[in-house]
Length: 211
Image (cartoon, rainbow, N blue to C red; front, side, top):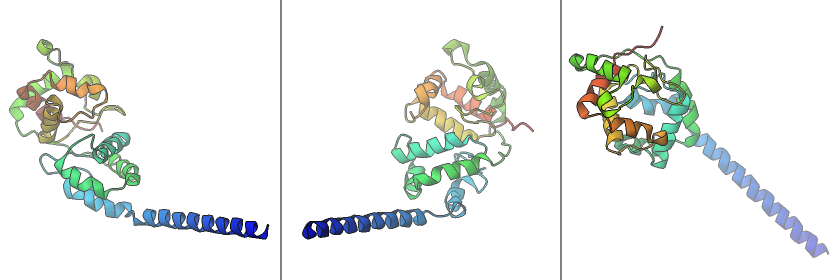
């Protein structure tokens, strides 16, 4: 009986030691996660500290819905959304950091943008507001609002970089990007030709945040 008790005591001690080691390991992993300020330095290289990237082709993160940003980060992490740049960055970001980062950028004020091809803005506005009757392409405003402010389901577009918008629309059109819920954007983009996509992108950047 004494031998049995010793075995039980040893097992309990071993179990306790294992639990302690796991807790220490978990704490160590948590401590390994850089503070938000440090992690933002990684994001700032492409998106600026306030999320208003000035590099053509890089998206503005400022003012985007926090859940949308977190979902995109998760999709990059899981390989559901592909980007050569993000593929080298996302492995360095822990999933626990997604929500804090998303919350930070969602609270930043978006700066106004400037079209690269002003002569396309009028045509882009018509497509954004009314769609394209000939191909039954729906109006962008139907999901993203007339001012491009978006919602908790559809991302904010106002002031977004036109080069980035065009690239993403073409990615949807060519099924390079397919992480849109219910393939809505893929269906829309396939109904627009490249010239129409470019015009819409040039109009979108002119949309401004409501005062």
